[in-house]
Image (cartoon, rainbow, N blue to C red; front, side, top):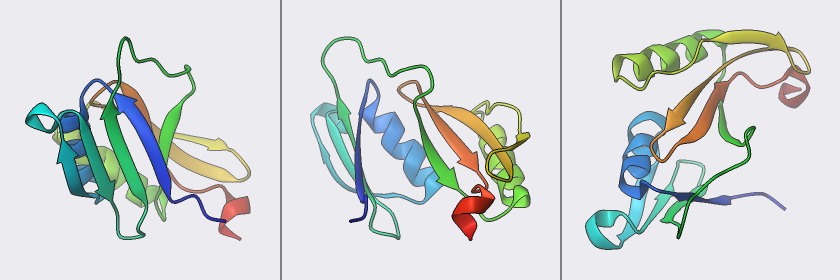
Length: 127
């Protein structure tokens, strides 16, 4: 069994879709709702489907909730941080710690106010 789909509820479907298309190589395959802000179905090169949809009422995720993307190296983490910074996305500081091995990572807020992590994978996953 393989996890190939995640649905996120957000207050900014259109902004979130643009964010994932621009910075994380997703392609929007379907939009619905006024101004494309009701539902967006995105897919990446690995056929992972990310859907963004507008929720009713206040949207809140637990404090540690985030969506994570692995990159191959600390240099790739730094490059993505620089790209997001240059675009005015205000990513957090690049950090290093031991999480099953040395990990380099940072967090950035996506439109709709949820966290996205960019990280090298823990050594135990790479093996």
